[in-house]
Amino acid sequence: MKDYDFLSQACKRAGKVKDEGRAYYSAGVLLDNVGRFKQSISRYLKFLEVCKAIGDKEGEALAYNALGVAYQKMGEAGQENYVKAMEFHKKHLEIADVSGQFMASINLGLISEALKDSEGA
Image (cartoon, rainbow, N blue to C red; front, top):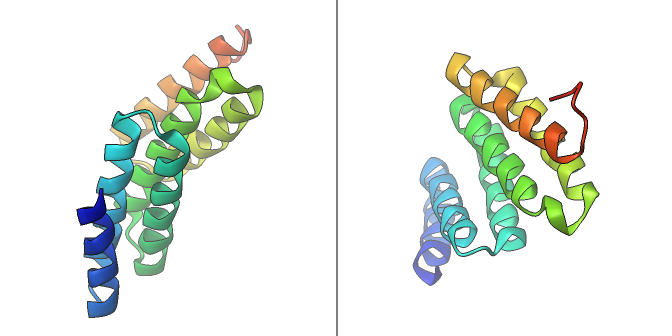
């Protein structure tokens, strides 16, 4: 974790914006994998910010998916997490390629099912 945090800061200072963003994303994945979803979300948000700043639509779609999934995993802790997850999956659906749209649709269906919304699922 410390390596990715260090790498992101070094890339930021060096003006390597895309690499900075990838370091945030990689840190988010690591945190996600150990169940530290709130911390992963903060890294994914930084990744999203970088992607928007440089016009990286593929990265932006990846960030929306990662954010949606992280909130989705926290859904059982509160319905507001499912609502937030749906917001990010809808944004992913809007800008993704065909396979990304498929994934976003599946995730939206899973959330609808978790919320007992069979019509939405």
